[in-house]
Image (cartoon, rainbow over all chains, first blue to last red; front, side):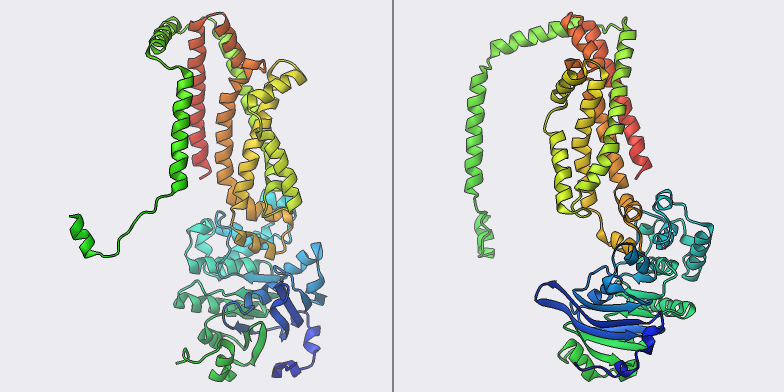
Length: 267
Length: 265
């Protein structure tokens, strides 16, 4: 197997709790048709990692395997001194609490208020009874207000989520993910439903929060120029495999050809 | 005109006749004629009928509210049957509806729940009421049990369908926070279906109110028994008083329903 340059670094990173190590990860939704074929990656405990690649190449599947919204067929995902790929039940839920996720279509609880949406980030920590009674602790409520302030949505706390615009929704969804006090932030096409200006604002917000909380971020993203602008590291995927792994400045047209195929679209 | 049209557009749109549908309409029309011939509908019968109807309505007028205590007693019992049956029916329907939702539960569980639902819906409430009268004796208990069964058959099915139509994206987001199953229900599922649930429940309350006036016909309690007795004794003025009372209660319930729906928009 050919390994990209960054893989040569020692496995010492794996010992750090916030680093993520993916070993030989495969996923087949239909037997014999792998969507991911033997992905191995090490993600440092800090910085923004962008995953680029054509639609249907397994980016979303890869990111969903990490928090096990999708169950991998084989392989290991080491994080927080645990192998996420083998967890189940309560252990899996406890591991998910430390992994924040931001979705392409925001996935907000449409009929609930912005505040309730942010507080839902604590659902892995509060008991079922308290969840049904909507009784969150004073610290949780304080933290939720603080996060809404940070993402610029403090004035909307009592509005219903379905009254918000796309950019506002994504801000709330980032606050919800941060509410988990995550050790890593996953983002699946967080800007694909947004206009160019809002996209930049959302990525700036995520970068800023990643620095503030000192957590790594993995972003699936279509837009190559945005990836180059915000990421510290770019991973290019094609047909379920990693075909580029390096710094944004090293990403050349030749690489883009091998990631997306063809060259007519490159200007 | 038509020649102009066809010369302007050489390609013509021709509607293709569905011969199976045409044949079905013809068969249905023939059957309708046959059934009507069996009924021996003729002018003489209709004239006699209208005559008798007029006489009947004449004897119903004016409505006689003298025995109001009997009327109020029966009406209150009907309302109690309806309210208890709706409450108990909803409480039982909630878990059954969740178990029957194919997007949340394993297939074998949904099948068991669906068998329960189909069993509850199979018979008209009056037939179920007859069974319960045999089982627990005459009175309001039999009527209440019958309407609980009817409520489960109706709302558990609607609950399950509403749950099957929710957006899974919201559930995915709540799952990703590490929330346990019942917290996912509280935040990811219920808010999406609550408005529709309230609609189903108010509809069922309305339906149970009407049915509770009817189960009395077979001795299962409520105003229906009083109504039946009045018919038997040819007290048509009391019958009309009872009918007016039933209409009034249903209209009040309709008003309450509208307020409920507005609250949970």
